[in-house]
Length: 480
Ligand SMILES: *[C@@H]1O[C@H](CO)[C@@H](O)[C@H](O)[C@H]1NC(C)=O
Ligand SMILES: *[C@@H]1O[C@H](CO)[C@@H](O)[C@H](O)[C@H]1NC(C)=O
Ligand SMILES: *[C@@H]1O[C@H](CO)[C@@H](O)[C@H](O)[C@H]1NC(C)=O
Ligand SMILES: *[C@@H]1O[C@H](CO)[C@@H](O)[C@H](O)[C@H]1NC(C)=O
Ligand SMILES: *[C@@H]1O[C@H](CO)[C@@H](O)[C@H](O)[C@H]1NC(C)=O
Ligand SMILES: *[C@@H]1O[C@H](CO)[C@@H](O)[C@H](O)[C@H]1NC(C)=O
Ligand SMILES: *[C@@H]1O[C@H](CO)[C@@H](O)[C@H](O)[C@H]1NC(C)=O
Image (tube, rainbow, N blue to C red):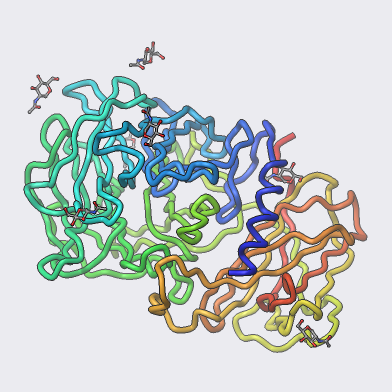
């Protein structure tokens, strides 16, 4: 707790100076993302919809300065999936209604209804103790809103926890949700909406007793896939996928979408982007990397291209530090970086290089603490802000998905202190994985132009840092 308080105090200074209208070059999973005005992009547990070549991303506003339980639904737009214009509040709280600031409005998803020519924004609706378990709708003639609040309801008289939405190519739309945690519940439902998308009409499939949440569905043109997470609050777990050739099923058995032990790269499923390009049909998994409930504003987005095989029903993601997607062709490009192995660095104190079967070069540096550091020398830089990915090993969360630690908000992380060319150090959060699992965390670094740069890594505030496998130095953050 002590550590994170210091970390967040430092972070807000960093965020306050990050304003920029420069154009992003890459999608960078796990970094802090900014909109085109330079403000931190706040669109959590979101939904995304494409209209005329523009993507509209809706999500919960969780800005640091907005303390209300419900402070609004933000909407952003982009034509390249890299640079997001803030389009304002799609839905704002109204005192004395079911969307007042002391109520829960979560997991917003918008969909266009051709019959009414209206956009319909759906969300999970609840009171602060999550005892109502309802769904809500708001409508607007314009995709960006502002949406007019219409109603909250108990779907078919039942309960609804979390919320996902899927629109099929035949124009039918479906509400995806769990029926809650009561003894008689623990199911996951796919429920068809009415013709105007203002309520639900018929349950078309039930995953009995699966006890999952955070559903989202996609259609490849051949096969339907539904992703769901386990119920571990803000702690991440192994997201699962089922597939079917009809929405009414039968659905396949479940499988993990990411390597076991990574807890879906520390994320929870929220939405999928479809880029139906001229060369490739590309799907991007979008997960929330939640911070603690007290620091939701620092939750990150992890978007990773999906590898889908309609013949086997396989849907998997692999880690990529950064990439671009051409929204016209659908082609994804993974730029190469320059690798600097930790074992080639200079260690002090208790830090030492040791053998590691899952590491790059089969070596890693362990024992990094507040007074035991690792220095990597002769790093070549551009003189402009660059992305540097730190590949680390933090097995503190060895016991799997749900450690049963007190409070939903407990996130296990180590904190490294990173200093470039002797400058004041910045904090690098290194969230836990499992034994032998190497994860990667990006950092925005400005080196001097040319060779001769040094990065020194130690434990933040005297604590232990994660073991370090390597760093990868990529190109400039911005296009200029
Ligand atoms: C990267 O750091 C530079 C220099 O501090 C800052 O101006 C810029 O806004 C940062 N960009 C991102 C995307 O973090
Ligand atoms: C809504 O209620 C809050 C808290 O009672 C109050 O501070 C705020 O001014 C009210 N807003 C409006 C628009 O009435
Ligand atoms: C939320 O609703 C449930 C069910 O009506 C109720 O038992 C609970 O007291 C409510 N919580 C609050 C904070 O009003
Ligand atoms: C919808 O957008 C159009 C064009 O931008 C604008 O003229 C109109 O006022 C908007 N309608 C609403 C209800 O916001
Ligand atoms: C659906 O929308 C149309 C057009 O707005 C309206 O006339 C009709 O009453 C609505 N139907 C329902 C069931 O709400
Ligand atoms: C992709 O676009 C083509 C051409 O517009 C269309 O026929 C096809 O159904 C689309 N596929 C998906 C999965 O949306
Ligand atoms: C390193 O730091 C720890 C914690 O601050 C301290 O207990 C230990 O004595 C230090 N070790 C050395 C060699 O300075």
